[in-house]
Length: 300
Image (cartoon, rainbow, N blue to C red; front, side, top):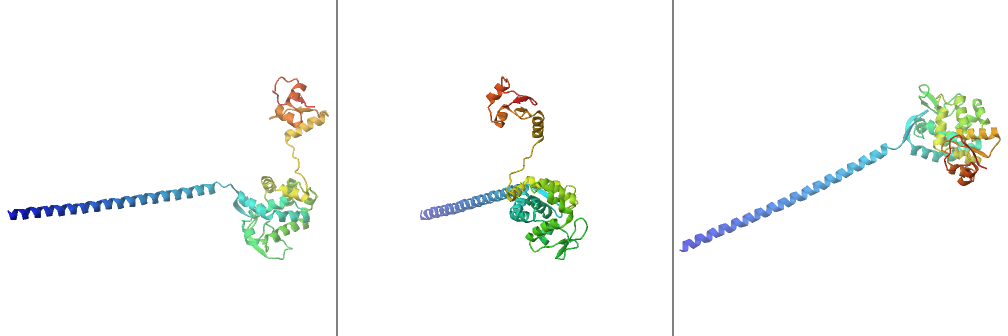
């Protein structure tokens, strides 16, 4: 009997040990699963962060690629952004205005040439020689120089200690050379005539040189600096429609009528002549606001 009790006790002890071992193993498995779960979560977070970083890089690259650029071709051939051109203008506008007061060259022309010839200060000549206007050595130049390929290989160009010297020499260059003398007979606020005059006098060989200068002046409103120096208002530029209207008015010697042009409305006409739609309708026996291109209306 005693032996049977001992045997039962041993069996119970073995079962108990097995249960504890199984419990330990189960606990280890649970902990292992928890560790794997946390690691997977961290990996997921890392991948999400990497995806966000790549998306941000792509966004910035797209923004950069969308920045408007244009290629300036003179002594330099370089693509620059609109911001770079505007920064250049801000940096040198006062120098251009000062040279206009002293030498009579429109600031708009000086700035447009500086932007074009120097690539907004990014071109080889402007960076290596502070030469912002592509002025070559010529016989009278005894200062420092650099070699640069332009119309011909390895040409001699003037070198300056600072951009301000280049701006001053540009003015003196135009003032002192006889072939540019006709420019100084032009109105100081007529940048179009100056641009064409420079091209005609041979400042550049590019047949589109004048148009490039005019385009820069008009896109960046450079003629405002001419007006600041001269103390004048903007030149009135009449459209072809304005010219037709003026011609008709002068030929008929009757300034109390208006010839309806494309885009005109009774309201716009009334506003132009400081009257009302009702009065225009009454003067012209109009039943409604309908008008036709070419129709003559009494406005006074």
